[in-house]
Image 1 (spheres, rainbow, N blue to C red):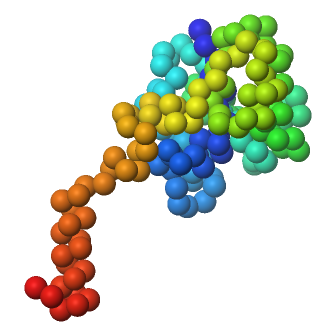
Image 2 (cartoon, rainbow, N blue to C red):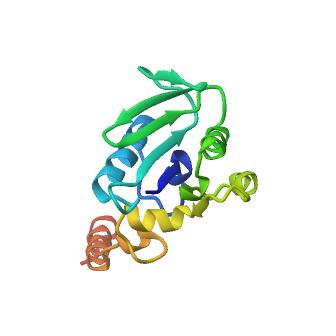
Length: 163
């Protein structure tokens, strides 16, 4: 069994993410819902922890950070530390860090945990699974060129009186 530790804002703000717009709360909830529905961690037996910087309402506090459960996903808010620090603590306190998979592009975490035995997955690779895409940038994959051509034609007609 693997334990995926996801740097939540690193995934949300990744150029490969399709989560944008709305409040941070909406973006966090969207990420959690996508993880539940698409299972980018593979087996349902694998544990998932998503770590966000900051605070939340209605947490129960443990080890200096807020903790919530959303189905099978543990959601942590770093409170007065950084998400990187919380991820570092989780990996270093693990009895078997070789079963940890850290999802981030943050080089600082790579340096801190490089010798821990934890594995790393880039946000690109994680987003491919999360959004069920095969190419590099999912935003580019979702462009419907036929649709965009019809929009261009419609705009020309309206703005330039062309037909």
